[in-house]
Length: 297
Image 1 (cartoon, helix red, strand yellow):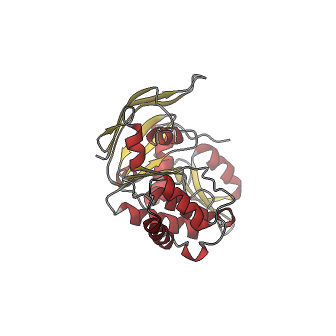
Image 2: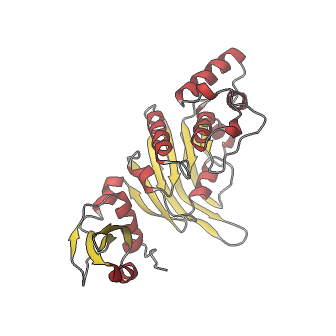
Image 3: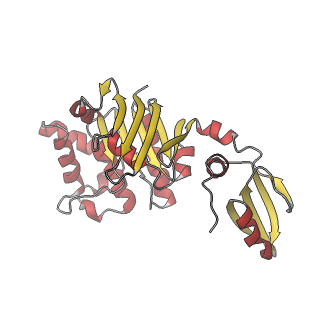
């Protein structure tokens, strides 16, 4: 395993227990960290990149103890935080050159070659003269991952990278991460968007209220929802009642009524038929049946 986490806890001064006895073994390749907002994902990410100290526990990254070898670990890491910002005065290539210098690339010629190659690989070479803060949202995320990759790290951590992107840019960004993950590196993808996990990760963890609620493959999580997803045909007057009784995944107009997808162990009082689950269904079912997180307003 590239990363081993044992008994990790984080308690803030206000008493908030953000992480509770986290135990994870993270392999090389793409690893998904899924969970609702406030689950503790960002706290865990900040600890892994040595920006925050844990209250207790152990973290080992490629043989290095996080608490004792922070500088060595930082040299192994690339990080794209959720709130990544760009300096307004830098053009796109200048920003990436600055990031390369910070990572220790001191040879000017080799640094320029590396910057040009990286801009090409993330599809930004044609806009290299544009000021970084004037790029589109998707381009900014790609430049963010470029600065995380420029020094060839062994571990890349990205926090909520596709939030706010349109579907085309989201797919492009995921494909970029998948291609990088095939180069014998570890990528930790922290997100609350289920589609980011299902399309790219072979191993994942689900966090809830600071704890690891599930660890395994997306396929195994999906199996837990088999026979638990239902399609119901209802009229408009029944929609509110169904929403009160079951977690509703989707509602589609159908003639004079609605076609509704819900997750539940069984359906009573409605004409329902089983429906093949996807990972989004499995996530909602797990949060409802295992963690009792689902509530109706």
